[in-house]
Amino acid sequence: MRIKPDVLYEILQKQFGNLRWWPVDRKYHRENNSDPRFEIIVGAILTQNTAWSNVEKALTNLKLKNSLNLESICAIETKELEKMIKPSGFFKQKAKRLKTISNYLKNNYSNNLDRFFNRNLLGIRQELLSLNGIGPETADSILLYAGNKPIFVVDAYTKRICQRIPLDTGNLYDEIQKYFQKNISNNFTKEELSKVYGDLHALIVILAKEHCRKKPNCFDCPLKEYCSFSKLLS
DNA sequence: GTCCAGGGCCGTT
DNA sequence: AACGGCCATGGA
Image 1 (tube, rainbow, N blue to C red):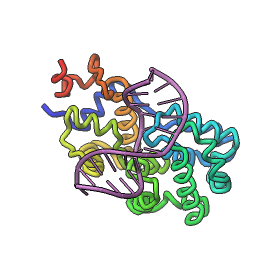
Image 2 (cartoon, helix red, strand yellow; image 1 turned 30 degrees about the horizontal axis):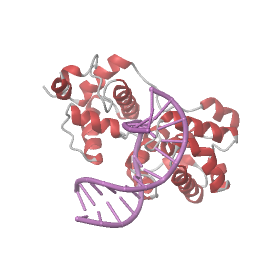
Image 3 (cartoon, rainbow, N blue to C red; image 1 turned 135 degrees about the vertical axis):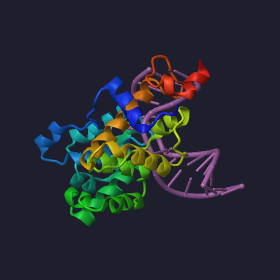
């Protein structure tokens, strides 16, 4: 029997619990009167093909210099920015990418993220994708976690799990995203969806780190019964 | 020392 | 359309 996304969600939730995800330092932004959504935008770019522990070091450096806000990123020298985000790797291109999106938000939306997010979902997505350095996963992470929009994020973990179980999704980013959005939306209200998509993505990340690693650890995996890859190994 | 991580771009086939 | 090389650091 082939597992469906809603069952997948149920099983993972039962195993790992409910998650409030994408780590943000709310306290920092309260005290500095800055927008926590911008930290999510920065994190989404810094974590491109990079371990989150390295991203945290970069975010800490930015906070120490009071630079984790849109205005500061626009103002500082690129070289200075490179130095601060160095621990996150690929620091030259990431510095440029941070500059690109920050200047974009400044020039077109007057540093006002409400104005940016409060528009047609697919329109915002297209705009993000048109920026150099923002691909589908980064765009959708920003839309879901910063913009609170109902859109499902597909990452390398999601692709790996879909292939192994397998799920009948196809292999392209848009195909997988549509598959999940189509097959999981029925059981939830529109208001619940962004929360559900966020939880599911978080659960997939946990599953991939604990069990569905590149070198799989199928022992005790909650999806063992449904996964043909696991059966193949045993 | 080797492998890998919450991608995306660009050039080549 | 699909694939390979490239970008870079730090933890396991």
